Image 1: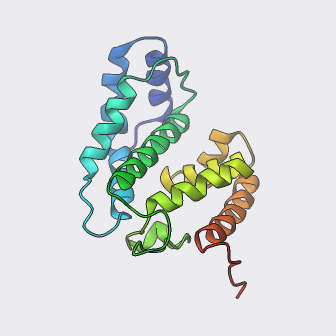
Image 2: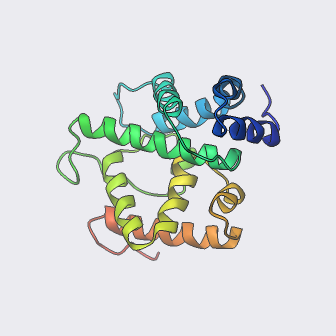
Length: 195
């Protein structure tokens, strides 16, 4: 199935914001494939032996979207950013309920690296990444949003720039700096090697 035109999705989002509940029913099949692809990516990054499934993650996002009130959807990128944030929260809550340790112990260390996007290797401690992202948000909200949109949302540099209303160069710079900050935080405060 090909990606629907962005303007179709935007029109349905605006209709839904205006109170048309049928617009959500029309929107769902248009964005389902993309949400499923992104959810599959997130679930694949989970620890080995996790029990959350891709379909369950999407269903939980849908249930939360149905109850969303008062959101003025800007466009497709804004919608996907909100869905990415929801997926992050759902997975983090799930990880916390599975008694992950915050850091150390027998929890695996998460290596925050560009390779996570394509490696297929499961990431370890989503809760630790969430804690680090929350810490980054306290220091620099926009950099935290860039990570959330790129890593959890799977948005491109261009889409992230559109959502945040900044230049693509700003997104690239924030992405580089945020990765270094998160790497330092998640390695126990040690500065990463420059080599």
